Image (cartoon, rainbow, N blue to C red):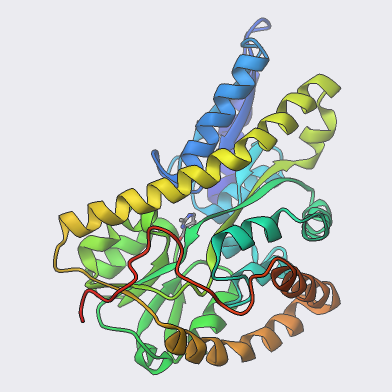
Length: 353
Ligand code: 6CS
């Protein structure tokens, strides 16, 4: 990509300008704006690394918009212009089709605690580790940023309600199929283009966690928020594999320990941010209809989503099939199937009732 080539050059020049006694810089790009879940993660990592290294390492955080789209950030990480980056499977499907397993609906549980255990299970992690390693990345962490919530300009209770809806998704190809299966006309767009597309009625809806619906102001240009608990928004923290291999044992220890410590921190943070911002949306836009699908409605969506698994298997091949089976087994083992209850902080009753 031309844009990311220029950015890479700029970052190289900046690196070359460092004084000999200056701290070493670890550049960390995130896919979200300041104050987001990813920003909280990056700022905490910065704090831990800079403290442990006593200032010998500086972590520079680049929020969304400063270095381009998610796809461009991934490219910069790949070519070593960045050392660390957030890379959501929602944007990684073209590069690593197998990771799109995390985009399939109703594969993970509707119970946040179960998904947390599943995503950190050694079997699951080993598979993802090798998928990312094959592409020159070292996987540091994977975590949920909260439920993917539909914001639309109409009520949605059944898959048919999506019929004809122009619906924005991230750039991974499987997401198109996921919403086309419900009858929507899915369209991929970069994150930064979604607000204006909603405002100009180029799209009728989109999907994102509550914290993002608040900070990107999507609630201003939507009339309905629908919790179907079809999938959490999972992201991954990656570093450039060569960079990781080049770290001294001490530095690697700082990084690995920081990632370990961040795990409980980020789960608590995302639950808190999503719940606080749901209240903020309700206050800022009292006419917003907030709905949670009941189990019968969810089951209709689950059934409609099943053919997308076949498409996933076709595109992700045997490694993808194995990964899907491992996830389904882990969810069962952790007690996440059959479905249970809405997660804490979600509206349980319909506001429109
Ligand atoms: O919808 C998106 O494109 C973005 N949403 C979130 C919550 N994080 C990053 C991603 O690029």
